[in-house]
Image (cartoon, rainbow, N blue to C red; front, side, top):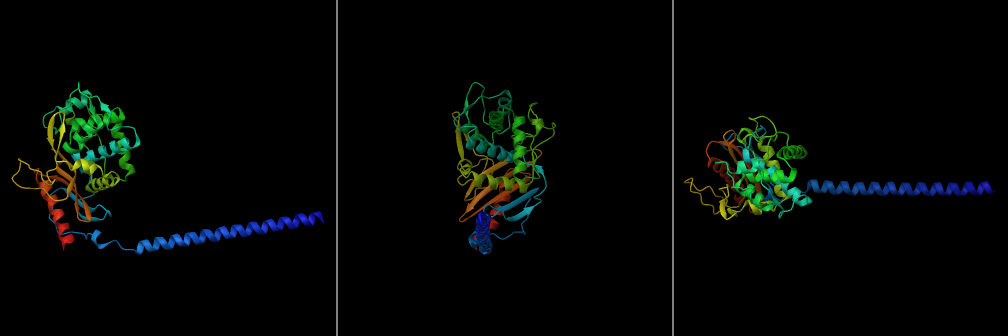
Length: 332
């Protein structure tokens, strides 16, 4: 009798367990079905028309490579030779900007931290023609000051100082740049320094690659990087839209001549464009003139990349051609 009672209890427990498992499975299936239905509904839900920009193909862009993308969707609107890895000069500083912004967010650096200037950063910052602010070794500069100099003026010495502040040496910083590029899926990108200068311009301080090596990226990779940076850190645009900034009692102009209200004495044509608020210029003899730009047009933001024009103003004129083609759609 005792054994029969024990067997009865055991069978009852097994039955209840089976019921609970079955109920859990059914609940799980119901939840999965609900999630699937929601996902399907989201797929069918169309993007509001005001955010859609149709592809453009009939543009004669005079540059080695170009791409125009919708900053919201990532859709490519126009492209020319956009997958070829090319020298991009200071446009590669966007990766340096990203790593510094991430370091500040993580607490590895603080904007008010001061940085001592190494021989390397000093020599490059005081080299004629290297679009720099003049750094001195008896002065202390904050991370914020150096970042503004890099993002607004494209200052090479300031960029090197930031790289050394974060990683101890530019060599270690370049390794971080290449690691981050792989993480972001930038397959046509390879960095050899933090600035975008060709290694032979670094006055014997280069630490990665040969003297003739330079930072290489495709127009697509630049657009992906720009999209990631401004979506992750939109506050960057508050810096890059500044037409000028003060640094150690001297005023420096932004290298982006498309910013509304900018006046430039070097050219006779107005290349400003309403809504432009970034992002990064670049030039070396090997890369030619380049510009990664972004503009807000009502509800639409686009990102553009121009690589390799012959004249300094052409990078902006070709960008205007891209933006005007978008305006024809959004205003039409």
